Image 1: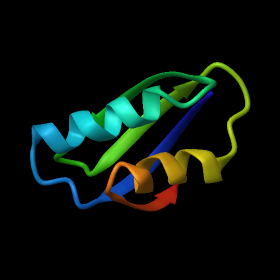
Image 2 (image 1 turned 180 degrees about the horizontal axis):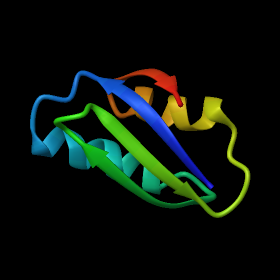
Image 3 (image 1 turned 90 degrees about the vertical axis):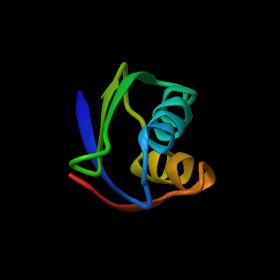
Length: 69
């Protein structure tokens, strides 16, 4: 299962890596691909992960999640 998160506040490749690392530390996340250009993070999940947990990981990393598609 994949979820796409819209993320505001990323300004550079370091920001994108910070979001990627934060999401990949969440239990149940298999991988995360972050696009600075599109301001998105596509997360591949191993199982069910609540949207709130993903949003919280992005917020705790210092960025603003806008929505999960």
